[in-house]
Length: 147
Image (tube, rainbow, N blue to C red; front, side, top):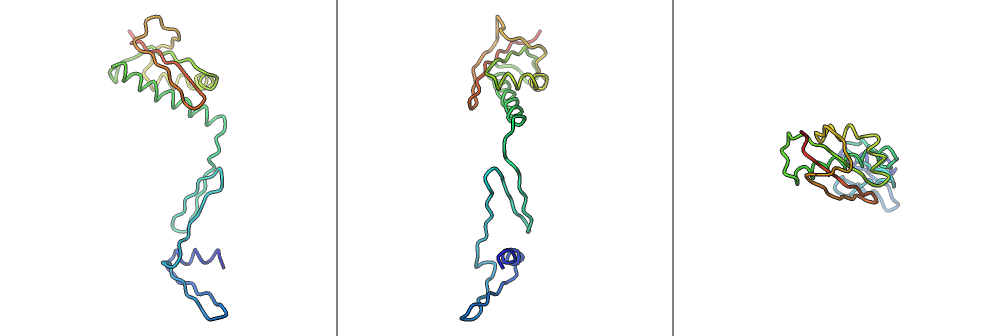
């Protein structure tokens, strides 16, 4: 009974239950049917279809997420430094283990997204520097305007 009940009510059909005292007819407005996600999953239901996504974070997703956060913070640092959107920069980023792992895999992408033409950690005359953190990760950004 239970699997058919929500489906019929979602379609706007009534559902009749036979009980010893007679019959009870349920209409869609009589019940509130909710779905909930199991731990580690996100679910959504529409028009009788249920979609489930695995939200478990693996090392690759964490590394990519860290890279995206690095890009975001470098873009913010560019803005704070007063750079124009089209200005090319010399960029240096150094940090904890997760940051360094992300940089190994995504350094070229980071440079492309932030208009960095050169990578240099330990810049002697940086235009702008800042420290950032996200969760357990911490990093230092150095920016100079490229020639």
